[in-house]
Image (cartoon, rainbow, N blue to C red):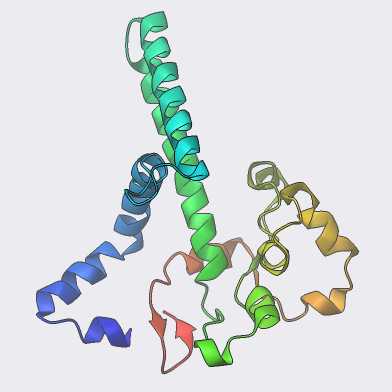
Amino acid sequence: KQEVEKLRPECLRAVYVFLRHPIVYFPVSTFYEWFIRFRIPPLGNLTGYTAVGNYKNTAGVMVMLYLFYLWKGDYSLMIDYLFGSYLGGLFGITLFHAQHAFEDGYVRNHKDWDFTEAAFLGSSFIEFPWFLKWFTMGIEYHHIHHYDSKVPGYLLQQCHEEGDPAYWKSVPTLDMAGYWKALGTTLYDETTGKFI
């Protein structure tokens, strides 16, 4: 918040606030992340493993979309695929945001940062209804993922349920209302120590 207040001229502050509004931020960031950043590797890393994977994935998607066009003779399947992909990306971006930028999120400078506190206080546990868990592959147990990213997604829930409940007492828990509320938190206020 303090950095935004320092922006000059005021029009830059207004542009920043506009772009960070959830109604603008999530649709725009989803398009950028899903269709540009994940598809086009950075110029400095054109030969790394991830870059090659991006090239192969993007080429595969383009071939698949072209085959859809040849098969149907119109763009309907292509549009369906892109729209479905966008909706999946939108859910992923909002999920990622709610897991890291909730009201009492853990933000510390380097000298005060602690690995365990960051894992258990800086990422949320989101209580999704059972039918949404099929889409999330357990990532709503994000505190465990932050503590040990080697635990596969399909074992995160089991790890949470079999672990000592005392471990999870301090973990911020969001229900669906908390999930939606977290989507509105876009700035960290250093004076209050909260996302706003």
